[in-house]
Length: 497
Image 1 (cartoon, rainbow, N blue to C red):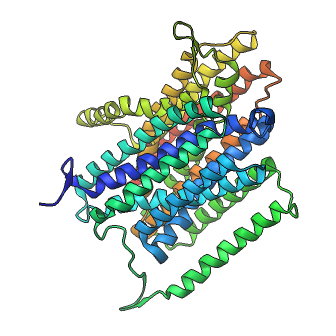
Image 2 (image 1 turned 90 degrees about the vertical axis):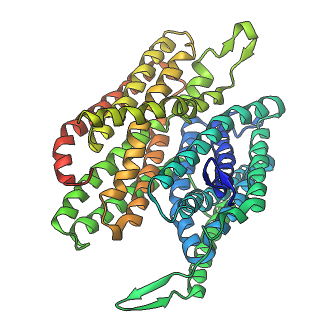
Image 3 (image 1 turned 120 degrees about the horizontal axis):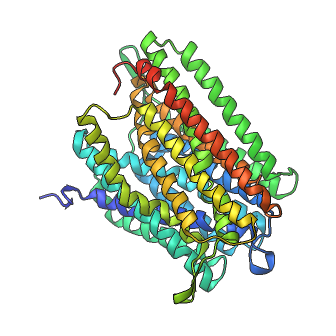
């Protein structure tokens, strides 16, 4: 009898633990990144100003999502998903090691680049292997992904708790070392239990279909393309390291945002007007454009968690638990999102089913709108908290806790729905490209998040309430517009439900 994991293929446990430790490392490191960048050099940090630090944070997060696109290509064309996961995990561990031991800022930035490449290889391909365990698809695949999603959130919850503790007791760079160690643990268990994956994620040569004939894509040509890309990246990093190219993170983030925005516009112009869509497909394409914008703008607010909200927790929140004589580590607040998902995601799943039984389940566009409005409501809480800070007092942690709760509610409404409808609304021949556009929207949102966070001035606390209210006006206003548009958008979707 084949080994099983809660009635699922035993290989799901392998992938569950691999992704859990990768997310442990990723979210734990991300929770301390901005705090490390702004920490004084004498304390072991890099001593950067807030604007530069949050721009680097935005570039890093955007890079992770962009790297998923070539990461999927490398697996599909060259080495298979299983090997991509192994190589990606090694790169993540190596990158975190560089963060822990680098004696120069350039070594630290190189570590971030290596992590970006590693996550780009591991993250999309470990999910692809999950799908490969269920060739029959259907409800068992949905159930398998639900269990896998639990692993993501276990890692996302534990990482920001454990890594800051190591940082507090053993020095600022120790947290990065802990991340490297646990990524290695995840890799070791993946290596020794990968036999349970069978053929899922193995390499098979891609083919071109031309009429009634097929031809294997020459592998040497694909490797050449990869090495050309690697050489260009290495030359660029070498030029920056040698000082031949001067890089300002803030300007680079702005340029990247304009570039990704322009690429998105050009792609959707092609998709809607050149890609030979029929009338119904083009109508659904209009919905995809609106959802793309909503996704990017949602994450521009949601991803304040690791930047401006993290700095708010560090500087303006009273984190002392008096009766324990214990100061809550700032990065612990980054665990709240995963914790709230554990608690409330099953409730939302039940709610949508219960509403559907009474024909009251909101449409996809309405759920998107609700998600954006909930995210904006979280910043209304922050505006109130900032008003207290502007009067000269620190605030208690429950202001941030309520903000993260509202943001999590928004994520649960928007993210699963968006991911699902980007595949449902696109014709089958464009599904892969639309998944890429979802990553592109998320990447753009992360860049915008860093730029928005850079506008908060630690020396001008009085301006913070107004700045948070600007986010409220914009996001709630956008959500209201999406809500108004939800009925015509539902008509444009046709029979897609």
